[in-house]
Amino acid sequence: MTTLVRTALGSALTNARQAAADIALSVYERAVLTSTLQPQSSGEVAEGQLTQMSSAEAMQRLAERRVGRFAYIAWVGTPDIVPVNYILDGETILIASGPGPKLQAADCGEVVAFEVDAFDEDARTGWSVVAIGTARRLTPDQRRLVGQRGDLPEVWALGPRHELIAIERLRVSGRRLH
Image (cartoon, rainbow, N blue to C red):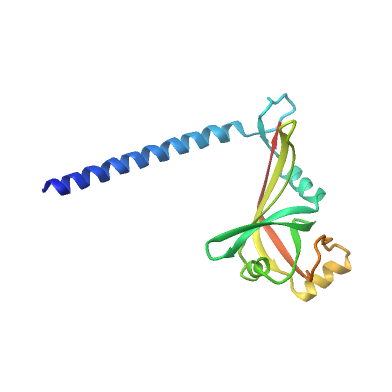
């Protein structure tokens, strides 16, 4: 074996060992973080403690708000996050949209994320709920049915937003910072 080959093998092994050590440290640190994220019990929680919301509370928080953030892939490999007006219809998030990349993501049935939160920066407290689900455009008949019930999102921004995007959630999770 030539010196060049031995050097290259040595460097590759050193790089692989370092990568394995970095991954192990990352896994350990993530385990430490998630072990402290416990469901809130009736007991005291420490300042700065993150607690996990129940699914029911996370859904309640989603139902209480009217503005959230919609995260989707706008172009190949390019994520985008935009504030949107929405309502919760059962367990489905409904967003009013006009033509553009949000609607295209729905037409493609993309997996998207939706987030609502509230924070008190002075007290360093707050909460956040994230829903992950599949986006789809409602058909005109489906949109008409939702409209007949009076359950359309109230749009704040000017412009034509006549389409409805439904996010059918796959999972919802919430956290509270005390």
